[in-house]
Length: 213
Ligand code: B12
Image (cartoon, rainbow, N blue to C red; front, side):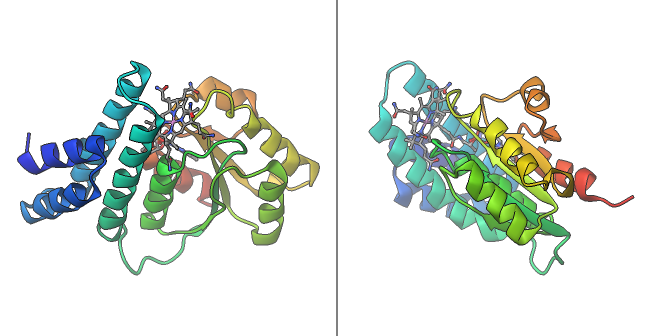
């Protein structure tokens, strides 16, 4: 594997933003594609962090510094991942459901959709169902994307969909859901339109769900 990708992985795991920055600079200078740096560097490191946490080798503080280093890396790659001057293909509201603070995956989905030409309204994390419904009423998006990373919060997606149904707005917006603990079956069971396993799938789903005709 390319040396700079190893540097990036180790830097994310160690929580060293400075080394992430150096590694990404080196990787880009070596001609690696931003997508490869993202997948084989940043995302690969984050899944190793998840495994270490699961095995009790690291704790929340280490996970947090790793997440910060990952965010630094994402912000550096962002301009490269987003094609400039693309005309908006539609409007997307994104948010992480109530009780859940994980936002790296959601942010990545936002970047990919922005790169695919969508206007993004990001409601952030720990978003209550009423706030989602209010935003759908106010912005009239083509698509709503919900994220959840915890088995204890994924059920809150159902409440969001119900809140939107209660306002009579369900027919006006397509809803896609994602996050590590989710499955296709779960998405179907809560009445979502689709499940996206990763950010590039989110972009292809957006294209197919928002295309007219
Ligand atoms: C980083 C991290 C944190 C950071 C989050 C920082 C941040 N700003 O996001 C911090 C330290 C805050 C954290 C806290 C906690 N965490 Co945490 N965390 C993680 C970790 C290591 C990585 C998550 C991540 O960013 N992955 C990288 C991104 C790119 O991947 P992703 O999020 O899965 O997103 C992709 C897809 O899922 C999809 N996707 C995501 N959202 C959406 C939305 C749509 C619409 C679509 C289409 C697609 C999509 O596309 C994304 C891009 O490809 C995971 C482990 C793991 N392997 O997931 C644990 C993990 C999610 N955390 C876990 C736990 C237990 C916690 C805590 C409860 C720990 C504690 N005891 O306090 C708290 C909960 C805090 C809260 N209330 O939310 C558990 C969850 C277990 C479970 N089954 O519920 C995990 C799985 C770790 C583990 N193996 O045990 N965590």
